[in-house]
Length: 148
Image (tube, rainbow, N blue to C red; front, top):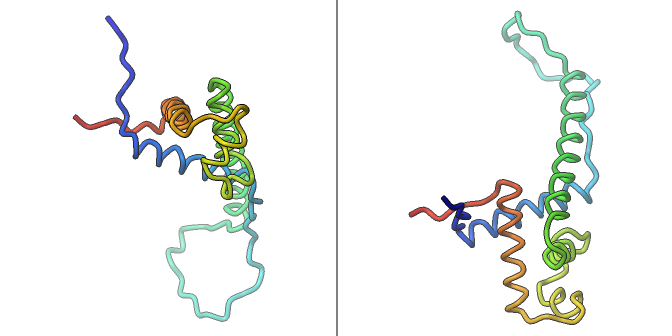
């Protein structure tokens, strides 16, 4: 009786993890723009819909604002928790390359040549990155398996 890790589709899984980390950066570093209720009347003619429905524009907006902020906070915390569980080299790579404010302007060569001390080769960097992506994909439920 043994346990086998799934074989993942490398390109699709890498794209899913990178998209997740990009969403993390957006949620972490961009300010949430809260919705506000409209208090001015419209000059358009509005025809009545069903009269048995009530609408609470202010309540719906308040619920949206609170839920979105909580969702973003939990998303960032879950991602940070998953990255914190990685081995130190993988964690360093993910934090420097994908989770920093300036990660849009940093490429892989900058990380493996200048961030790692001593610098590592691009082959070793690719292996470390794939191991990190593999673990993150399984932890964050982003894994895309190979169809046999």
